[in-house]
Length: 65
Image (tube, rainbow, N blue to C red; front, top):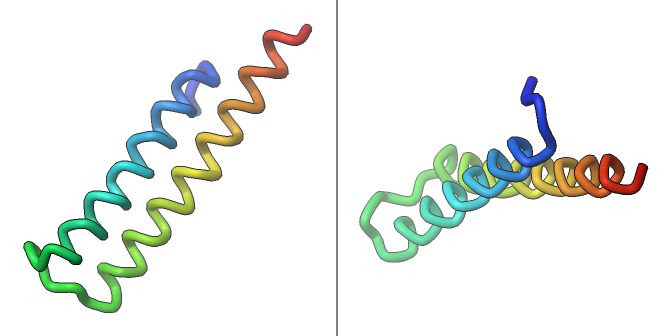
């Protein structure tokens, strides 16, 4: 488990970036859009959003005290 909320924010950012770049590569037909690959892109973006928001909330909570 990451030791700081900033690590969570970075992990979330990279997951979102991975999901976006994967979807973008499929749109440009650099890679073939398959069913599992599309879901991987979607779930990477969703997980990145959730992890990033949790990291941001943890960061705000730690600075509030």
